[in-house]
Length: 89
Image 1 (spheres, rainbow, N blue to C red):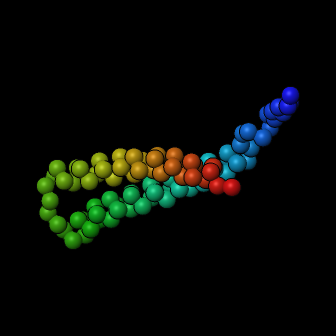
Image 2 (cartoon, helix red, strand yellow):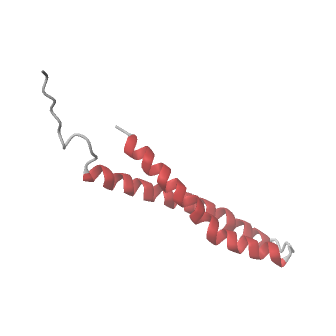
Protein backbone atom coordinates (compact mmCIF):
# COMPACT_ATOMS: atom_id res chain seq x y z
CA UNK A 1 0.00 0.00 0.00
CA UNK A 2 1.99 2.90 -1.24
CA UNK A 3 0.73 6.39 -0.76
CA UNK A 4 0.80 8.66 -3.74
CA UNK A 5 1.79 12.24 -3.19
CA UNK A 6 0.52 14.74 -5.72
CA UNK A 7 1.78 18.29 -5.73
CA UNK A 8 -0.04 21.13 -7.39
CA UNK A 9 3.02 23.36 -7.59
CA UNK A 10 5.37 21.20 -9.66
CA UNK A 11 3.27 20.70 -12.78
CA UNK A 12 2.85 24.17 -14.30
CA UNK A 13 4.97 27.00 -15.61
CA UNK A 14 5.78 29.94 -13.43
CA UNK A 15 4.51 33.41 -14.30
CA UNK A 16 8.04 34.62 -15.03
CA UNK A 17 8.59 31.75 -17.50
CA UNK A 18 5.41 32.68 -19.35
CA UNK A 19 6.35 36.38 -19.32
CA UNK A 20 9.83 35.71 -20.67
CA UNK A 21 8.37 33.39 -23.33
CA UNK A 22 5.92 36.05 -24.43
CA UNK A 23 8.64 38.71 -24.62
CA UNK A 24 10.86 36.39 -26.65
CA UNK A 25 7.96 35.49 -28.96
CA UNK A 26 7.23 39.20 -29.46
CA UNK A 27 10.86 39.85 -30.30
CA UNK A 28 10.98 36.96 -32.77
CA UNK A 29 7.74 38.14 -34.38
CA UNK A 30 9.11 41.68 -34.66
CA UNK A 31 12.29 40.50 -36.36
CA UNK A 32 10.38 38.31 -38.83
CA UNK A 33 7.86 41.09 -39.52
CA UNK A 34 10.61 43.62 -40.21
CA UNK A 35 12.54 41.23 -42.45
CA UNK A 36 9.51 40.43 -44.62
CA UNK A 37 8.42 44.07 -44.70
CA UNK A 38 11.97 45.09 -45.65
CA UNK A 39 11.96 42.74 -48.62
CA UNK A 40 8.78 44.24 -50.04
CA UNK A 41 9.76 47.82 -49.20
CA UNK A 42 13.12 47.24 -50.88
CA UNK A 43 11.46 45.82 -53.96
CA UNK A 44 9.10 48.78 -54.22
CA UNK A 45 11.95 51.24 -53.69
CA UNK A 46 14.09 49.47 -56.29
CA UNK A 47 11.32 49.58 -58.86
CA UNK A 48 10.81 53.29 -58.24
CA UNK A 49 14.49 54.22 -58.04
CA UNK A 50 15.51 52.41 -61.21
CA UNK A 51 12.28 53.53 -62.92
CA UNK A 52 11.27 50.03 -63.92
CA UNK A 53 7.94 50.10 -65.71
CA UNK A 54 5.66 47.33 -64.49
CA UNK A 55 1.92 46.93 -64.89
CA UNK A 56 -0.28 48.61 -62.30
CA UNK A 57 -1.42 45.16 -61.16
CA UNK A 58 2.13 44.31 -60.07
CA UNK A 59 2.47 47.60 -58.21
CA UNK A 60 -0.84 47.07 -56.44
CA UNK A 61 0.10 43.48 -55.64
CA UNK A 62 3.40 44.60 -54.11
CA UNK A 63 1.61 47.19 -52.03
CA UNK A 64 -0.98 44.72 -50.74
CA UNK A 65 1.64 42.03 -50.12
CA UNK A 66 3.81 44.48 -48.16
CA UNK A 67 0.90 45.08 -45.79
CA UNK A 68 -0.42 41.52 -45.43
CA UNK A 69 2.51 39.11 -45.71
CA UNK A 70 4.60 40.51 -42.82
CA UNK A 71 1.71 39.80 -40.45
CA UNK A 72 1.11 36.36 -41.95
CA UNK A 73 4.78 35.54 -41.35
CA UNK A 74 5.04 37.11 -37.88
CA UNK A 75 2.08 35.31 -36.28
CA UNK A 76 3.34 31.74 -36.86
CA UNK A 77 6.89 32.86 -36.01
CA UNK A 78 5.65 34.16 -32.66
CA UNK A 79 3.76 30.92 -31.98
CA UNK A 80 6.68 28.64 -32.84
CA UNK A 81 9.10 30.93 -31.01
CA UNK A 82 6.96 30.81 -27.88
CA UNK A 83 6.71 27.02 -28.06
CA UNK A 84 10.49 26.76 -28.46
CA UNK A 85 11.26 29.14 -25.57
CA UNK A 86 8.84 27.39 -23.20
CA UNK A 87 10.50 24.02 -23.82
CA UNK A 88 13.97 25.30 -22.92
CA UNK A 89 15.23 24.20 -19.50
